[in-house]
Amino acid sequence: MTELRERLAKLPSFPKELSTLDSETVPENPNSLFESWLNSAIEAGNRQPHAMTFVTNRADGTPVGRTLIIKDFDENGYQFSTHRSSRKGQELQENPRASLVFFWRESGRQVRVTGTASALSDEASQLDWSGRPSYDGQPNPDWQLYTLVPDEFEFMQAREDRNHTRVEYNRDNVGQWAHHLVTTPAG
Image (cartoon, rainbow, N blue to C red):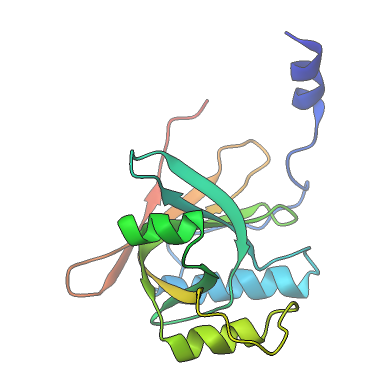
């Protein structure tokens, strides 16, 4: 074992006291559970609870992740923004499938939201642009507000023994959500 590997193995992973996730008592709609977890992270004072890893795919299928912040969400989707001409904007134009991954280390919680991104109106995009700290009063025609319409969620609650609890939600072809406990072999 290398010295670095030994040092990494000794680092604490999660707090000693963690919440539990019971697949029998989760809400039918994953947006409700997401909102509850996000609000818990905000109320607990987690640093940047609105930060997420945004994952797109290059034309050759290579996944690419970077950190963004969520702007808002509702029953229609999860909003984020970027320049249309950016790498991620171009990747979304080629393949609108994407994932958002939220990780709140302080509570040992992670959520993956996967779906299809679509561009919102120019009016909504410019309103978003005007709310940026660098806004100088000038419109930015390259700025785009998107919404990711989810068809899959995975909620993960860490456990000290690292046999984490995961609940996955999938949307069926009529728009209804179903969820199940994801089980993996121990070890």
